[in-house]
Image (tube, rainbow, N blue to C red; front, side, top):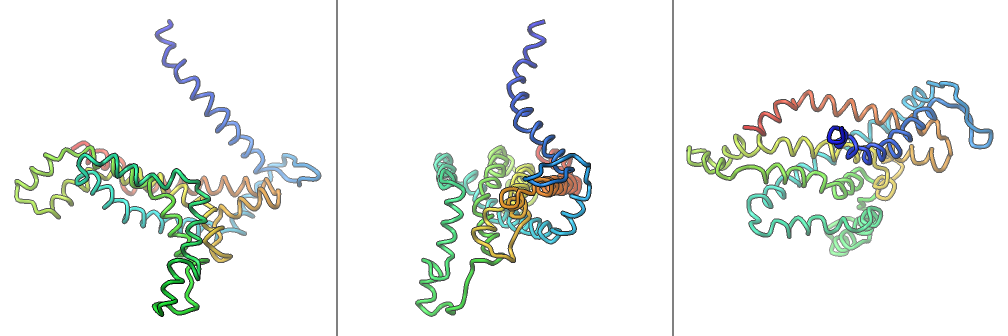
Length: 284
């Protein structure tokens, strides 16, 4: 009997943790999203589904912008992360741990501080743009802050490790003898990469996209620090409704709407890419 209960007892702490800090707040927020009222008179449960429709109609453009920024930042992360992960996995030799540590070292600093530091770097008269303007390489009215580029660059920088690490793990698992066998069968470097390395690394790319796209689309710090009024993301709206306007029902409804959109996007992404095909490629 004790041996039969052992697995469940081992799962109990994690189950309680998820129940207290995930399931219960989620249920409370779901109930709050259907309420009406205000902070002075209180909120009451009226099953006001219009909170969802009003949120979509009012902030639809913010949802679209958040998903667009999430897509751009995720693609940029793939473009940067894959060569980095490939070099560490196949070329770093005995120094792999050192390079991974250096890659993660900036992220021991607060997320807010790292984002604010980008604001100083990209400032109109900052270290980069100020120097280029002084040398006549850029016009005096050129600016980067409060643009889509600044927000996407900040998102890419802040969430890059979420893409590098899964891809690195997938590449690290590849048996180098498989690549050598492809070369022995007269496959060139490009062909060996396309036919062998890339398919075997797809699980890492698949996991990296999910781990990056979801938090990037829900982020609000980078848009608030590096962007302007035209770069507001849905995360900024939710943050403002919660903490500035105390409009908890609308904020909760927007949060659940964003959650539903992201879950639907992940499901469609998995279906289009083919999770089964990815796993089969990894097992070859």
